[in-house]
Length: 183
Image 1: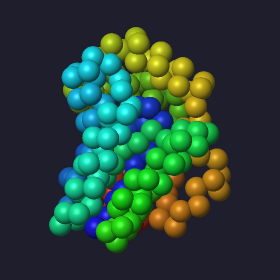
Image 2 (image 1 turned 90 degrees about the horizontal axis):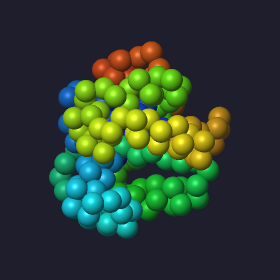
Image 3 (image 1 turned 90 degrees about the vertical axis):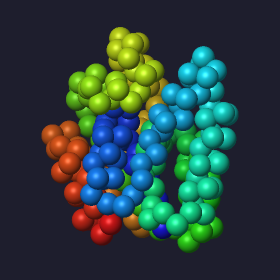
């Protein structure tokens, strides 16, 4: 089995690249908003504890399945130890089952991400982003509060690639990932 962590800042294109990668591989996509949106819809607010528990169950069951692999999208704040711990926790769930782990970091400027923040595909799959003004402000505020682009040499994993997808289509990025990791 394979686990692809598709990481990057808000609106960098993680879900869209994941959708394209799913089309050209046997990988399944679990984008982070699949649990975020469900919890917001049910609870009426964002609740990390519930989101985390839901994801853990999905990860455990998927890791024990006969599926080829999973793409998981995650906005990793590299300056937050809790985010490093979470990635390690998810990685360990899969490693217990002998899974090969891959890390793909996408990055693009805030200007490009603000344009992507209002795409039809994003708004279709992420209800909480439909208040565009609030979503844009959250993106800007998160950029000020968190560092979601790794520093050179910070990521020491064997199976890691960092891609500037500013001016590259999601389809082309998915092909790069597939070829780079021989998926």
